Amino acid sequence: MLIYKCVECLRENRHSTSSLFDRERFKILKMKKNTLIFISLLGALALPSVVFGQTIQILINNVINNVVWPIAIGIIVVLWIITGILFLTALGDPSKVTTAKHSLFASLAGTIIIVLAGSVIVMIRNALGV
Image 1: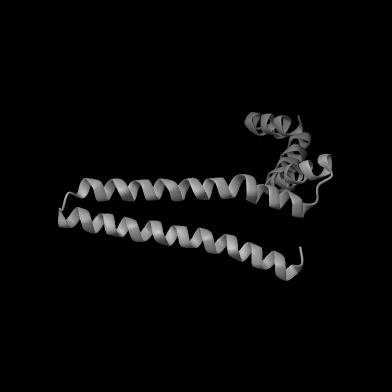
Image 2 (image 1 turned 60 degrees about the horizontal axis):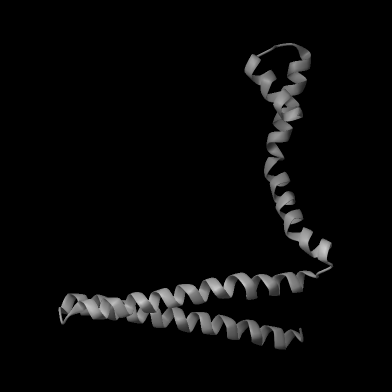
């Protein structure tokens, strides 16, 4: 409500002392907007842990296991399918075979990165005793 009032004062260009006070208040609100957004996002992230009694560790584990891994595995599967299609459609054309080989190396590198990322997470958990 206060923000709408400040915006209306700025649009009307009133020069009374009350509108100047409202303009200063609007400037302060505008400066703190990024801070308020950040705090709101932190609150939204912390809300499930407060409601369900979860710790941040459990929340992060749930996000990794239920969001990050399915997306990563889906991307890897799509990369391998695209690589297979590129090899099938190359039909011996040297430029298409080269493109398919580049896709093969990209798919292989992506798979290795995903596997290593999972291994690093497990090694860090074991090192910290979590």
